[in-house]
Length: 567
Image (cartoon, rainbow, N blue to C red; front, side, top):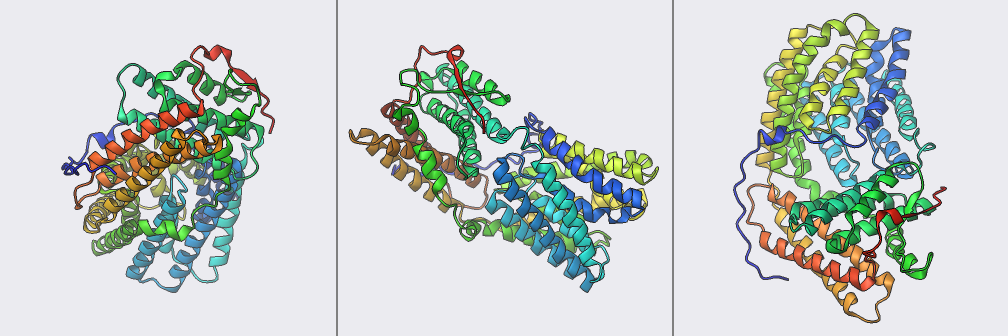
């Protein structure tokens, strides 16, 4: 390991304007936006026809599960969506039973805070992806404050379960049309980011940020492809070879043709045949080409880490969530609020990987909610034209929230806020001024108290996680370097070592970035991190050359072949 002296951590400015800056929308922003509309509309419209719109809050709990798992392959998506529905039903059951047993607001807030902490920890440990725990916490916290009897609980749970089953069908509906759609999108993203990095590197303007982003995209593509642990199809093998080429481009950008990578990415995004990546210096279907994927097959066979081992490092986040949500709810109650769960949910939505990101989310949440209450006041006259108008406004807010939240969280919150306020009107209309005032107060209380709790609960383990990540990179680099220098090393061993080192580098960068945004800790070994990354990238380049995976410099994108991609 390097003996470089750790450099002191700089005092960071708290971002305000930067936290509100808009980014590019997701390539598939319309998928969750359309899915949630398709999941919410039928149950809600059926209740309108039956004259029981007061029950729509329970069906909406199940319908909102359609927001999850859009980035996962369909085989994995089926399992994740099923677990999300079960998790939603579990939290809802606890909330409904608690609400039926007590009306003590302090007890209800405490139960809501504990549920929020469990939901946060489990969603982070399983990496379920956006919207993570926030929707689950919103559902369970809101229903805690709806009067219940034990006799009503089974019926309300049945409504949520039926809507959740429909949401599962909505999420799986595209599978027959584009069975490899998620894998194709992830592969195209990896190829495009690798091409962008190769262009900057070849132009003499190599950026560590661009390199880290490219490695992260390639790593995400591998995770997407490996999520389908069943026997790989011809299409998936072809996509895996493309990701290998993106990974090779990162290790040797000077020997990469960015135009070729972009051409592959464009072809992958469509529904046609996947481009063939075989090196023209090899015979089609040769052993050398098949060896590229030996490491992939080995990794697919490895069982994932048990859930309990992934929950341990999340203890500080879980404690922050429980404490912040509880205190926010208590303060809201002390101020006389009728809906303290708004403050609780605001606090729950703040907690990110570190304090700097948590601050940014607090800024985004406050700004989005303040603008959102103005939007609610503007659309209220339309929503109160009748039950059908109310449902249509809710659907519009659902679509707008998912369409905009990819640009920035605050922009999506502009639609989420009126959505939450409109849901409170499902049992009956309420004074607009009172709703707006309560929401503004609870937003401010939740943001201030929630962030104060994050300051109070420090993550002292961040530095140790960086040390462990550094050790993992050093060991992976030594193994790859030893195999690259050994004349008898097999292609399978080289491929496994290269992919292991690439994954370790991605984990090191993510761990270091998360730790750098954490406050009240000892100085981080930033210099050692940089030196370890540089050494790892040199070893990756050497391993790529030893494997003979570099593309033929004379091959252009117009010489791309294709292979059959029938599932």
